[in-house]
Length: 158
Image (cartoon, rainbow, N blue to C red; front, side, top):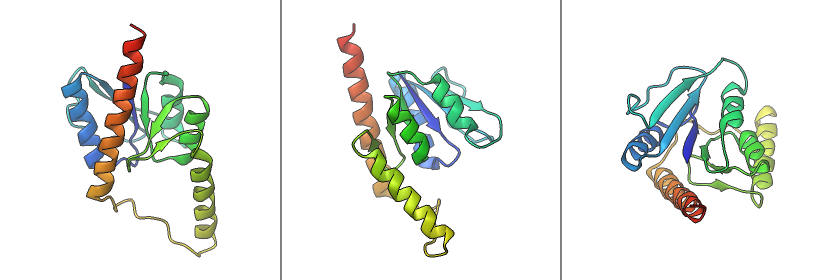
C-alpha cells in the first residue's frame, strides 16, 4: 500500500499529517509536484518526494502511471480524480471527500459550472488559503477509513 499525493496545491497540515502517519504506520507516502515543496520526514524510508517535469498534468500523469490498485491517491484535481476513479483507484481529496463512481460526475459537473461562472465573471474562485480545522479533521478521518479498507483487503489476500 502506498499513498500518492498530488501536492502542487496540497495544504501544509495535510502534507505534515501524511508524512507523520507514513512513518508511524510504516506506509509509503510519495509526494509528487512540478516544483519543490518542503515535506516533513523526507529522509525516512517511508516518505519520498518526486519532482516531475513542469507542465500541465505532469504530476497527474506520473502518479497515474505509477499507482496500483492497493494505493490511495490524494488530490484536489477533480478531472484527475475522475480519471483515477474510472480506472478503479481509491481517491480522496484534502477536505475528506472520497471520490467514487457514484459521486464523481456530480463533482465534475459542479467544477465545470463553477469554472464557467468564473469565466463569465459571475463567481470568484475559492481561496486556496481557506482550509479549516473541520476540513482537516474530515480529511484525517477519511484517510484513516481508506487505509483501514486497504489493510482489510490486503489481509484477505494473504
